[in-house]
Image (cartoon, rainbow over all chains, first blue to last red; front, side):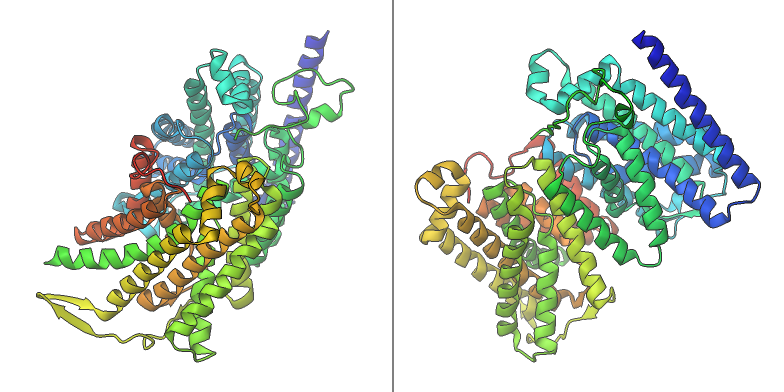
Amino acid sequence: MAKQKNRLGFWLSIGSALAGFVLFQILISGGILNPFYVNAIYTIAINIILAVSLHLIIGITGQFSIGHAGFLAVGAYASAIFSMNLQLPFGLALLAGGLAAAVAGLIIGIPTLRLRGDYLAIATLGFGEIVRIMLLNMDYVGGASGMQVSNLTTWPWIFGCLLLTIIVIRNFTNSTHGRACISIREDETAADAMGINTTYYKVVAFVIGSFFAGIAGGLFAHNFYIIQPSNFGFLKSFDILIFVVLGGLGSMSGAVIAAILLTIVSTFLQDYPETRMIIYSLVLIVMMLYRPQGVMGTKEITSFFKKQKPAQGGQTDEKHNTPA
Amino acid sequence: MEYIQQLINGISLGSIYALIALGYTMVYGIVKLINFAHGDVFMVGAFVGFYSITVLKLPFFPALILAMTVCALFGMMIERIAYKPLRNATRIAALITAIGVSLFIEYGMIYVRGAQPEAYPGTVLPKETIELFGLSVSSQSLFILGISVLLMILLQFIVHRTKIGKAMRAVSHDAEAAKLMGINVDNTISATFAIGSALAGAAGVIFGVYYIKIEPLMGIIPGLKAFVAAVLGGIGIIPGAMVGGLVLGVIESLVSAMGFSLWRDGVAFIVLILILIFRPSGLFGKNMREKV
């Protein structure tokens, strides 16, 4: 019975997602939305992919990584190289961007994931900066002046990647692997004692998260005519971090909602960047002082529609314990 | 000769890192928090120094002391408002708050006075070149080195010879036990923030005089590098922060001397990752386990 319900819910959400896709496709190709709004929608979708991919690393696995812009940069530049210099079709270039970011995640993850808490945070922050400086010094990708990219990102591509990201990360969270990751988040030592290979699961989550960040990077790069290393500084990492923290550490729908709301806010505050950053920072401080688990906690939006919460990954407990 | 010249530059730069790193290391030693806002206290110090020299027409040393005082109060204020309510919260919540405070100070500063950089008056310190064994050393870098060494000796004195220093060492060792022994933990933590921030403020003024250009976002990179220096020396250990700062400054200057000046900022982070992988407790981590 419960299984049937779950399946119904799955098809319901796929159906409503497709309906949303068709609606926006008509709005965009019918010319009803002006380019400003179309671009805002693209940015929202890319930010959702980024937020959800970081949510897997921070919210589910509890690894505090603040170098996500580094993976975004790797994906953006790799896919730009594949599509511009090697003339591959866009889909393959996107995949290549994702894979390049996943390899970067693997290389960075294996040594640094032995670190805990703030040390991991600082090491990933350093990694993001190293990527930026490397790009700045590589003449092949244009150095500081950046790299020209043709505008290939379209709504079907963005939507397809968004849907894929959400389905993969949702299913991963609810699988055995995802539960192992959640147990690491709740208490790494206890998870280790219960026979969970913590290093393996942390690296897997890190690699999946960076893969989707790389895909987002590919979409991001091909949404503009030029990409520059300065697009990928740690302020970008903080932007993504704020989506995850504000939405709720451990709630995917929270991350999605926060990404949508904050992108809308920052689109309208584009002309006042310092006001935007002041609002962001105040939100972060006040949030941590009064509701450190974020708006949604570890709850998902679907749990508001159910009378009895089924015991599912990521929404077992109202109290959210982040590892020390 | 070129390399020795760079070595001297590296030591001057390193002593600035060391001054900032001391604040990181003291705060980390006592509340186990990476105070991201520390680099921005450094920036505030540079601006207070700038305005007291240009607007209040103060000479260098009074300006330095004024900047240190303002930064000490500022650091205490940050601790009381943002960090104290979170003392029993998770480490990640505290770290996110620290990031928030850092962004707030940076963009608050831009909001108040704009993002345009400011040029420090170059006349506050005598600018002469001293010839020494065929090397030319600017009097400014000797001044900087002298002030840094003086401040570090003063800090060692405070930590090891005064009552508040003893309290700081006790709280960092075991806050609960210190509380039972009648030490006012809150005041001790405030004092730690005040001393660390005062050192950062001094570093800001020195940085401004030496590098001339100051701007609201100037604290980010030196702040991160100073943190690297603190980790390099073993976080929580005062002599470690000094040595870490000097080593990092020298490494950076040598990298520039070898012709990789564009990679200078990256080197600090590569050093950080290598240290964290191979010797997470830092250079002084094992044999000199002395915390503040």
